[in-house]
Length: 198
Image (cartoon, rainbow, N blue to C red; front, top):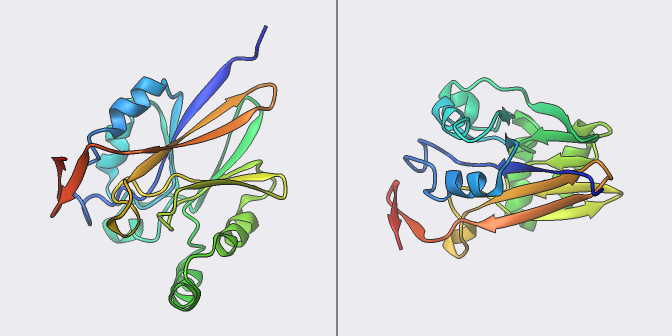
């Protein structure tokens, strides 16, 4: 008999209300269709109402992003959770106030480098097999040094307006399979602070 698969929803950088007024219209339907057992929010939710809305689909775990404290959302910097024997570290990936500003300088000079965020995340993740982070708005799933790093991208906007917003799914089973999936959020675009059908 095959081991049962558990699917987790992964989302980050929803930025409500600082950049957009509501969740992308596809977020809840996609998580429902995937049958997620839980939703992991990797920071910059910015409003507690976002987490409450996600809880309409499944239980939610969330980590603090660099913007969350400014909106009164108090969350831990790192959440460590486990499903079917797989350990997961959930964080935003900015590393705190000083690393955030130092990274701004590196970003201007060097551009985006996954390895820079991977180092910050690895230090905070302990022995977790999966590290889920946000902050960069770059969707990706990479295995490095036997550990999976997953960034679902921003659910608020794509990179530089050229790509769709996105979220992720993480499929796990007790036999050790760990399969990430990045899904674009299509069909709508942001017009000022609202979603309009495209």
